[in-house]
Image 1 (tube, rainbow, N blue to C red):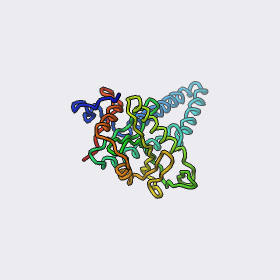
Image 2 (tube, rainbow, N blue to C red):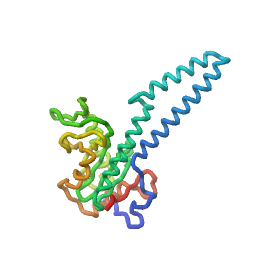
Image 3 (cartoon, rainbow, N blue to C red):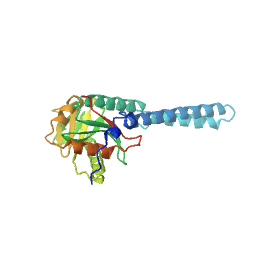
Image 4 (spheres, helix red, strand yellow):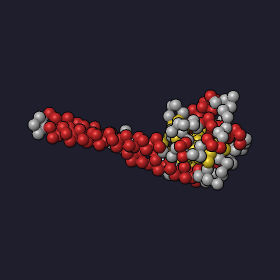
Length: 246
């Protein structure tokens, strides 16, 4: 049975239901900054203790060494990578604001297995968008996805997984609607965008709106609202969305 569409008073246009782009990444950034600061504080305390008890100085040096290693590029405490991700998701959200007013854009949709960066719902269907803030160029070679000379098939698997998780939420709500898996390159170029793969697509940020509106598929407005209602739980603070700008 389809979940009923939200009445006007409960449609997710109210700020209570709005979730801003990159909220998950922002929370991760705050957490890592807190861990970084706490580690520095503990190391400083141990170093001061080392004046009277020299083994504490070695523990402090060990903590600082671990911190330096984990804060390196691509590591757990790589704050720069998180900041790039935040800027990338915000840039994609800005691009999606150019969709016609008949489309809904949800940010940070929780599936129970993680967050999907953006979900677009409109007359041409449902799209699960994963943002990649990498530099360089995406392209297809021998049927596989590459970025800067390295295989990037894991990016397609991630996008397909996100789309399947959103589709599962719809099925649980009694809605049988396919969800397109889309990788959006917020910084990198995309050779011959969109690049089409099995059950996944890679598009440039400049081409994401055209990709969505030109899909040869059509669903009724009542079904659009039913999909939105299934992904936005009234009263929850971690889901939400807004219609795109007119």
